[in-house]
Amino acid sequence: MISLQGSPTAPSPSQLTDGASYIEYWAEDAEEQSRYLSGWDQRYEQLSPGPFRGHTSEVQFSSLQVFRERSNCSLQETCTVRRDAFVIGVPVALEGAGWCNGWALDGDTLLLHRPGDEVLLRTPASLDLIAVSLPWSDLVRHARAVNGDELPPAISRTGQALHSPALAREIRGFLLSVLDSISASPAILNYTAVREGLKEGVLNTVVSVIGNAPPQNAAPRTSKGRQALILRAIDYMRSRIGEPIPITDLCSALCVSQRTLQYCFEEVLQTNPVAYLKALRLNGVRTELRRGSPSDTTVQDIAARWGFWHLSRFAQEYRQMFGELPSDTLRSARHLTGGSAALVMPATDLPH
Image 1 (cartoon, rainbow, N blue to C red):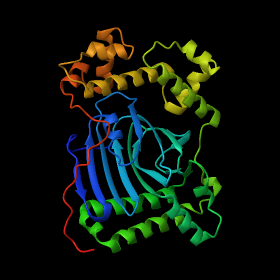
Image 2 (cartoon, rainbow, N blue to C red):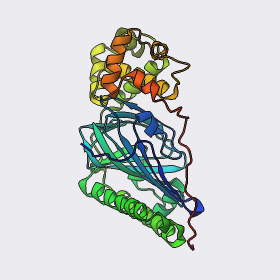
Image 3 (cartoon, rainbow, N blue to C red):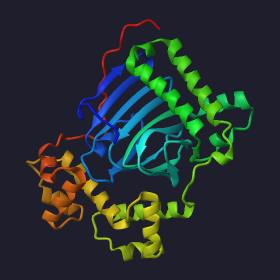
Image 4 (cartoon, helix red, strand yellow):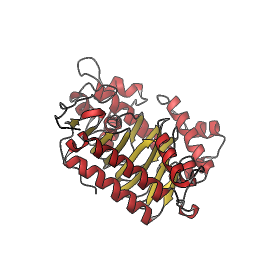
């Protein structure tokens, strides 16, 4: 199990000059963790049972973002990559199987996402992942300066994954060294030479390591048809999240057999359609409870809005998933807002 220690409620921020920053967050809820990464519109839902613990550390400078996310439960993460960003992610540690847009995820997998890519990540039972988001225009300019006018295939293709112990080890080691150095002394980012040197190092590493990766390094993946079917099923479930959805109705809407739907869910998300829908609803209830107030709402009202009518059975399922009763969640509600607050320390007074 990936060890996560620290306060689940207190961010550790450091604001520097010229927009550079280093921030750490501890989270006790998947939805809470999804809001901490700066500039990302994400949705996290917990799929495996147990109290959630997560940690996010992030550094930003010169339009680059290096971040590390750790979680101790299986999650479904959905997001869209920014229109101006190219993203590379690689696991530091993980337990169990994971999938990203149908690509198998293990410790030797590099996930690559171009600007505007839709990302569907089903994380393993626990995951520690480090990634870099860099400006697409800077990457293209640098790659063409090194390789000529034609972009390397690994950079030019829409969302994909490479499977290579050597490539994963090099990118992982480099990004960890960047993040570890800055976390030990965030004030070094006040020096222009450090910021520009790090940016040049990131671009050089990405282009040299990934730019010439051969096609045979592609990771295993599920068929595009199964991946597309899962996305259609998820859209259908979300559009009717508070209604009873018989599997027969879902299969009819998707024009597939129950066996096909079951197989696709088990392969791509490591669960079945019924359990997945229940997980979606339980996560929805938890989000409302954490934003509610015991004085003006009840567990029964919120549960009913999400389609749970048997209160005692719902309470048992909720406790099994999140490690506490829904009434405990409501009592400890902290009136969370739709995004992490920008809590920063004063800029340090160092020369540039």
